[in-house]
Image (tube, rainbow, N blue to C red; front, side, top):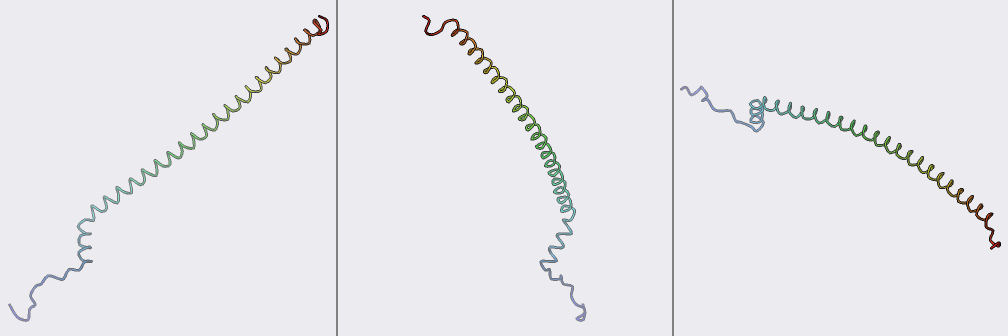
Length: 107
């Protein structure tokens, strides 16, 4: 060899060169992992939207059931109060008839 010809030496490897070299080697794996993460994210968003819709539906059903039950109980209370009032009026009438038939001072 000639002294004027430089001897072949390996270039100095910097951390950046090493990182970029490994990145080129693993780029397909990285893309696959990013695609998987993106797919999982879209599935999660779809599940979340479905669950929110289910929650909204259940809330509206629950509200309707509670309101119907409340209305039914209010009507039942009115009916029972009316029955009680009729019974009290009937007892008053019977008491009045008994007083008329059997006055207190006539024994």
